[in-house]
Image (cartoon, rainbow, N blue to C red; front, top):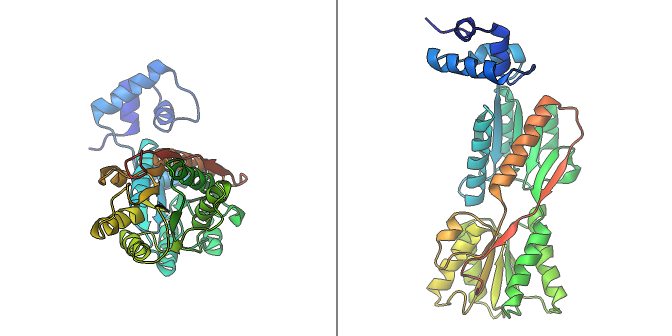
Length: 331
């Protein structure tokens, strides 16, 4: 026979209502002694709350969803893992969908999450901006990450892409590099444009007016490999490269190896993302570390706040990443 909340209350010597306050963290305070008795009774009896009944009572499913554009990109994979950890700590189940950089697939996932009545959504759109109309019609709290225009009407959690790129390229320049090329991501993404602007600012700030080559391509190892191979085989002059993602940089490093270019002696590299994968390249990748645990924590906190109060004004939180020094920059 299933253990009930009343059984827990009898074992702990408290009311069923007080058991509810302990298990739901409110709405009324509970003394430390009473809380301990309730938790001990829960453990001894093996009580498991009825999630379905709770969802019906609160009109919430205690589940949130996250939609990412690509699960192969190590940055998105690590961010999804960090978000899942944050959701777990807050007793929320996380559903994850991957759009595979396909807008139609992204819309399909959005509709599916709505049909499953998730309490909220964290979204990194496959496009330069999300399908605002579809999300608005869903009437669920949404927080946009990474590719997050501030004029969408939704809360956003992003990093300072421009400043981070500026500092990364300035680091290359401190090593005496005078012609840092740039392998950027897709041209239409705001975050990519901000990183390119930071690259240009660093060069102009150092008096470099004849800009080195700039290549736009997708965020993948294959694309980074092809872009670097093209640069190395072209007549363009460059002595280093700022690369807009770790995934691209890993591919670029292979191209350098195949064409006999030593890193960092022949070509110095600084990338963007700071993923765990970059720490295991040879030499270790110097990269802008986005601070995935902080992004996940702030994003989940913001989403849960909007679940509690979906009418509150949208907030735009910009986090500051930092440069993780490896061996590809010349340090």
